Image (cartoon, rainbow, N blue to C red; front, side, top):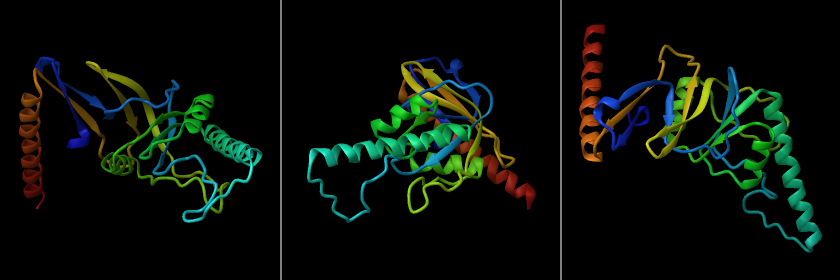
Length: 213
């Protein structure tokens, strides 16, 4: 329930509504409008490649070596974004904070980026779509990208002064997610209404279980 409702203070209760899909309460790190169905990729780590493995010291002896290392990172990041573009992946959903080189090349190749998602949000998206996060770097950097989610729409959403991300997924299950936009004059009223609704949903779940049994 926490990931499927958004409280908006400062508006009358009558402004509350139900939206298809899910609402992520953060802004795009990069937004590239795209029409029609697109593919989304889930990641849990920074996409900027590391120069060494964890625990291994990397020594740079000259400015030339340092600049060459930066060029290598840039080329590898750009190659990944080209691969995403060629696979019609237009949305990157990341639990990690991405570095500027990743955001720059995402914009260059038409890939929208939403970063710093919580583990609960990532788990919900995985449950809806049936896909697991992708690990782009490692021993095999050219392996096929197969774990992608179908997205029916992806757009900014303004809730009073808060910029959010509104996404619709093609669910692989009977569950079709919707998000409750709960409006009220102050935070305290919203919290009371949210708690009451959550209790009501819990009661309905118990009733449905009893009927099924």
